[in-house]
Length: 470
Image (cartoon, rainbow, N blue to C red):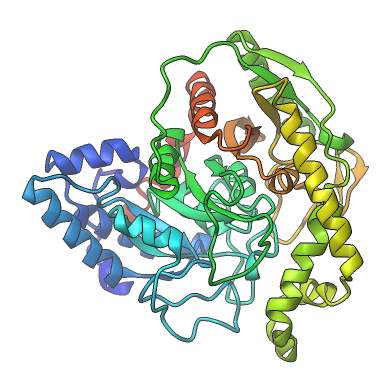
């Protein structure tokens, strides 16, 4: 990393804040080279990331080899893969061939991976450049990004606050312009939560459309890989590669029927979050969409979710308890809790899982989209999960994050869209679609994105020329 930090030739170029389509067009026209952009990314990481700790490891040799290959392909003038030369960070729950995988744990990461995880292999085949492995909660078992590897990952909007988790490093890397896009995973909100907290777009596909990994087992009934990006179109381009199907924007949108739940299951929501999300839904209504406030049929989702998640930790990682001092308290607690799960618990969870799937799927007979806040509160200070939200005492585990995991249980595709600021911090709106409705979900999110002010320029002003100031 130090070898590229000294040159710092980024000057006035904001390559890492460009939309992917603009970057690829510039490559095609030979206005900028993949090597130049990759060097800029590595310089920015070296100069900035000690403030954010978004990366666990940086992979300059891998990235520059991929960038040089991309440059040769562009110079050849022939057909090129769809993400050729685009810098993408990879959550450190995925294997990248030739790089170590820590899983956010002191107990892993001794040897480089021999093969790519499947979502990584798809990105590699599409020509992406891998800048490094991003910070994650240990085994993905927390909605904040802190572990024993080093300092907690910080939020690019305010580095004293959390970016969320467990894909917090992925989101921070994109937010601060340390990658064009990121690969994350979402088993209980781990893409949507950090996307919301960092003012980004994040999407979890329909369950089993894009499995997170066969090599690393966690939340196996609920988890998907997916993108975290600055714009909906950037996510569309990654998802087309990852889902292996066309997601071209449709020509006709029309009036949509929206089930709006401002506080699902009666959970308290901070006044700022409530105001910003309500204003965004009002924008949708003013655009002609039919908005109806509803109570969502989500009761019992914790029963469906908790037992199989904990049991996965027990059956795949109970051997680590002999090294308990090297585990975070939350990872140790999850593994130990899994040892108390019974067959009866798992059977009850399975029945409730199917019930939640049936209930939520049934809502799409009457509605095109379900909408909720993504978070119950604003990004909070590192290490200080709120115990009270809007004057109401909340659960320390789920209090800030009660709205994402129910849709892992339902298996529905779900996205978080940045819809504004409160107290200078980003707020996300969660939009949920019917099974396999990723194309319609992207179209609708893009329609809303176009109707709201972008936060990209705010982050570019903060981080865009940070290299020059070092």
